[in-house]
Image (cartoon, rainbow, N blue to C red):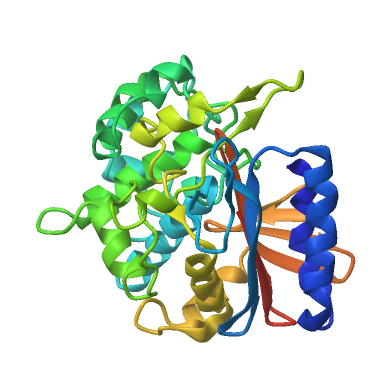
Length: 346
């Protein structure tokens, strides 16, 4: 339902009491054009989820109506947790943002077409999409297979198929494999004696934020509430098999796109980014400092990228957050710091 991208701009609505009518109108228009699947929406103000609802079907074949409690894949919103993990570890002194990636993942020397004498890429360059690495490895389908627990091994196997498209730190280049490498570097920074990447994100972010329906794998506690995914081809053909098969694992795409979540859980994450804590996860001052650094932008200055977040400008409105796209699923979680509002669309 690509028509729903405009929902993120609802943060410009002066009063949320007026917003639910606009949400319903946008969704009804989209459902009329594309009756497959459904969606869940949440509106956030400060530390509160002030509106949530489901529309259409969480399972079209079984005619199960979508609710705000359904679980969806959130794709690249996962990158926000990876980026904030880097910020947290740097804040705590475990590593430096500017540390070379090779210090943690020396296997990156196998990446092709390195431009000499350019220095090695750094952690912050991976996090801000300025590493110059290709978006994906060659022969991508080979590296999209495997359980979540095997993701790091898949990353290492993929490295010889990754290339430099640009010298590091010369321009913005969105890279999924770059964020997988970042996740692996963070995992190795935590060891010896520390936890693996997924455990760290669960213990340092999901659990303290109260995100009980959020994880990298379909847990028994929410498996029955996972909305079915549907991919509609240009000719109208509906593919439900590929999204269903990917629940078994997406290969290397864990630190960059594996997470499942709900409207309520992502609302808590949005409120956290707005500064409502808990401070033990990351102090508000550290979050504000991070959001104040957009490291790259497009030529029109209408969009930029920081450590794990996008920033988009539409006139006077500036919104932060991230979108996500996985086979059969689309997601967005955005917020406006000036109005203290946020939107989640799954």
